[in-house]
Image (cartoon, rainbow, N blue to C red; front, side):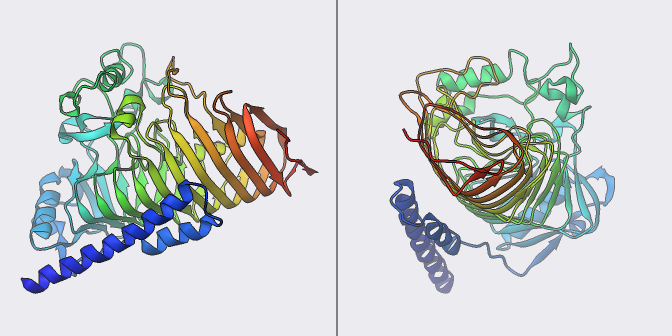
Length: 479
C-alpha cells in the first residue's frame, strides 16, 4: 500500500511539473511575446501526459455480449467496464463481430478496445440513452447521454481499428435537425420547435442552473457521439466513426487529450468531426475527416453559458490530418464566448469540391470572445468553394445574433501554404471599427484560381510576405 501511494505521488509530481511547463508556454504564446511559437507547440506536445493501462483484458463476450447485431448488449458492456475499473483498469475488448448497444459509459483507467473487424452498432432508440449532464451546441443541459460518455474520469481511452456506427440517417436522428435535406417534413417534430433549442438558449441567458435544464424525451436535441466531460489524460486512437447523430468527438473541459489516426466519415447535420470545447492541451494528429459540417471546430461555449464557464480553449494542435468534405477544414467558433488561443495547424491536406473553407474563425457581438495566436504552416489545399482564410465577426445563421460583446480576432499567421483552386476569395476578413481584425500574416503562400484577392473590412496590419495570388505577387497593405 505504501508503495502504491509513492507511485501515485510520483505521478502527481510529474504531471504537475508538466502542467507548469505547459502553462508557462501558454502564457508566453498568448501574450504574443514568443519569438518562435512553434517551439512552444513542441513543448506542449513533449510534456503532454500519456495514458497507461494495466495489462489485463476483459472480453465483453465473457460478460454476456452477443455479436449478432440484434441483441442489445448495453448491460454486457457496462459489466465489463465496471469489473475492469474495479480491478485497477486495463482493456475492455470488443472482439470481431457486430454488437448492438445503447450508451457506453467509461470509467477511469479503462481502455475500450475494438478489434480490427469489430463494429459497435448504437441503438437508434432514444430510450437507450439515459439523461446525463452534457452539452448541446455550446450550452450545458441535462439531455440524452452521448453514445460513448465519460465524466470526471482520468486515464481513459477508446482504441483499435474497429468501427463505431451511430446508425443515424434521414429516418431517425438526422430528421430531428429540421432540415428537409435530412428527411424532415412539415408537421414532424424537430429541434427547431419553439419549446426546444430556443428554450435551452433562453434558460442559459437567464442563468437557470444546468440541473434544471432538463431535456431529453420530446425535445429532439440529438446526442453527441463521443464526449469526454471534465476528464484528464485521454486517448482516442485508430477507430473509424460513421453515421453520427450530432457532433462526433467532443472533449469538453477536458485536458491532455490525444486523438490519433481516427477516421471520420459522417455526413449528417451538425456532424462536426472534432469539437474541443473549454479544453486545453489537445493533440489531433494523423486523422481523416469527411464530414457534413466542420472537420475540426474549436469551441468555447455559447453566449451567457460560455461567459459563465469562462475557460478558454488553448494549446489545440492539429498535425498531419486530411480534410475532405466539410464546411471548414480547421474552424474556430461560433460557440466561442470564453475565447480561444494558441492554435497550431501544420502539415495538413485539405481538398474537396465540397470543402467550403480551409481556415475559418466565426463569431459575432452576441458570442464575443478573444481569439488570438492562430498559427498555420505547411498546408496543401486542393479545392475550396468559398475562401482559403475567413475571419468573420458577423457570423449569423440563427436569426438575430447581435449583442454587446464585441469580439477580438488577432495574430493569425499562414506560412508555406499552396492552394490549387482558391474559390471566391483568398482572404475574407471583417471586423468592427472599434475592434478590427488585427495582425494577419501570409508568408510564402501561393493561391491559384481565385476570383478575388481579398475582401477586407476593418482590418489592421495585414502582411503579405512572398505571397502570390493568381501568379501575381501581393503587396502588404499600408494602414
